[in-house]
Image 1 (tube, one colour):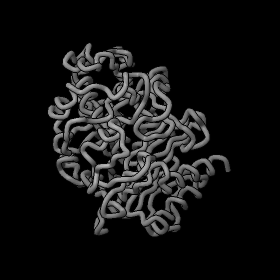
Image 2: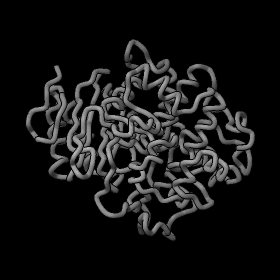
Image 3: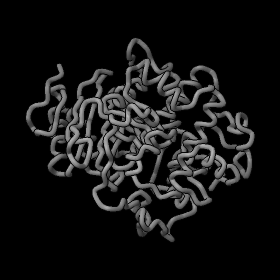
Length: 397
């Protein structure tokens, strides 16, 4: 039975099963130990919601309380939603992961991109980590401009032979392919085929009338340091983006250099970038991942179990050419290398600043965490790692 959160912290509201008291306490401590501004965490077990907690503030002035309906920027966690859209049309027989992109979009098939498949793009193995020509955030959010700048570009490695994180550029390409195959944009498909029928507060971008539901992102310091992302020598910030230690594939990822506070702007919120500008609440993300595990919601499933398993299958693995760390990628998810619990089949996606969602098919558990204060420690983010550790301690207690 779900219980109201006890007064472990004046910041925390919501409900949780008594089995997860430790997780609730860890989450509450974020507000004192890590200067959490506002956040939510949710867990499903066996498809049932067993933790649904939130607290703090939506804004840095602390005038708007975080509520159960607050949506936070998901940043790269959006890629999992996009991957699920493709899994659904693959399940419907409209496409396969082995389909060549140029079969649907002939203009794409230049400069070595002729062999790129849908699966390559979704598993970060296409060699298109970003743009070579100079880009602004405004360029990136203009899909036609973003695609046009990418068309003459060659992959950074032969597609399918290596993996390297495709942060932003993959979004406009995937959206184009999806529209050519299915007829709707990814943003519209998410709204009509996922959010509405399954009653989930998730979206790619936001409608103007929903801007007020979004949490305002803040950063701990004046400038966001990306050095921890690349795990290489030296570091750089948004103010000083140049670093001679970056490879061409890495430099393309930060072209343009992205400041997470762009998520507060009407331009970002209203745009359609299905690699990065998703919004959602932790409860809905945990419930979405439960659907990926095959659980029903509103009497329906996202897709057949075989399609969900195929979406989670490892397609590319090895030393990530961007992050300089071992990675395993499926068609939309990262597959656990050990930081997200004990089970190697756990699928997840993290986003800038600390947000993440995971699904563990062995433990039949899902979790999502959505904060609005961005950290820059990436995999070493203590809030993220503490919650994952607490989850499995609760499960094994």
